[in-house]
Length: 97
Image (cartoon, rainbow, N blue to C red; front, side, top):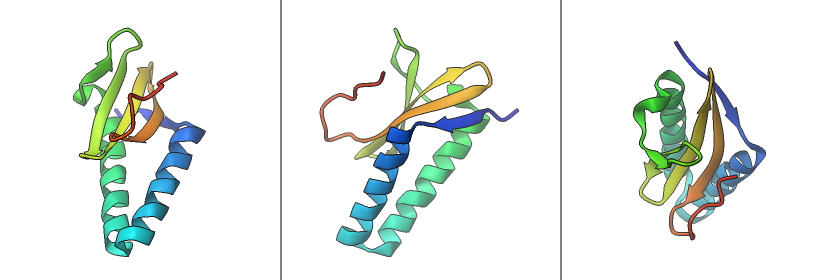
């Protein structure tokens, strides 16, 4: 059974900003590889959201690493997965809620 993905506006904005940065700095091939990796992870999360480890036990937030510099933070709410952030890991700890 597949879960519904609900991607926050902030996560969408960060994702588009990252893709634009990668295109400008490294070219289309790197940007496309990153986008493919994110799509693959979204598929894994939708199919099995418990696959990735809990990042914040109190808030039940999970973390999936896209590449070493980028992670996806999400929570499971019944049959929905709420993607809170797609963030550069080199920044300070994320504000999840």
